[in-house]
Length: 212
Image 1 (cartoon, helix red, strand yellow):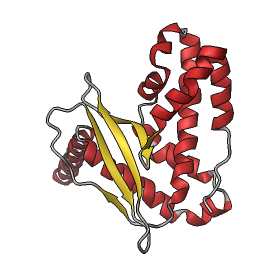
Image 2 (cartoon, one colour; image 1 turned 135 degrees about the vertical axis):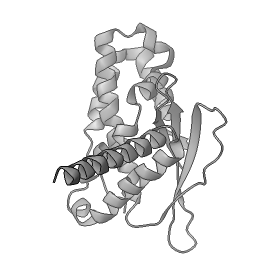
Image 3 (cartoon, rainbow, N blue to C red; image 1 turned 120 degrees about the vertical axis):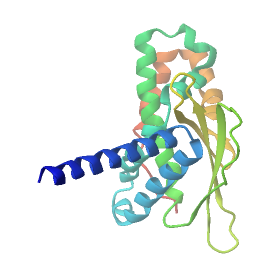
Image 4 (cartoon, helix red, strand yellow; image 1 turned 180 degrees about the vertical axis):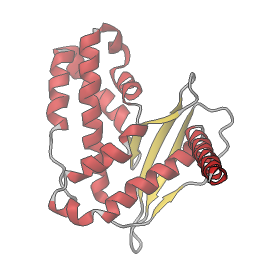
């Protein structure tokens, strides 16, 4: 019995070690992370189409669970604020990041209304060559001769932990970070960060609408 117990313990340790090793490899390779994230994200969207049709906002739940844990909201928010970051106090900064995170979730969920059960194709892995930022193309293939929906996810490697995190998604070549940086810079100059935060919070509350 003791021998059997030892075998079970050893098997458990081997399994945990394998899982940790796989997780560590994924965290150090953005292409592996992109594949795993896409499989989970698009798989959940496909298997929950009935629920999404009844309540499109359920897409936010899927995005929150499957995609947001891999998004570096603060880094993306810093890029959006740009030079204005230095003039924002800590309380305002935290409020902005919270609102921006909710906005990213809403925006990604809205973009993903274009997906139902199409095939998803992720570009082949390219050599990283010590790069700290990579862009990975995800094609959502359409029926017939219709061009695929092109989504480009930008990933950044944390210089301290070595972990890769996504910080931007460009739909059909339109970067969300760049777009919002341009759009919100005028509000920051004219009305300040508090007004911008209020507007972002309002945008983040917008319901998800299914594409017709």
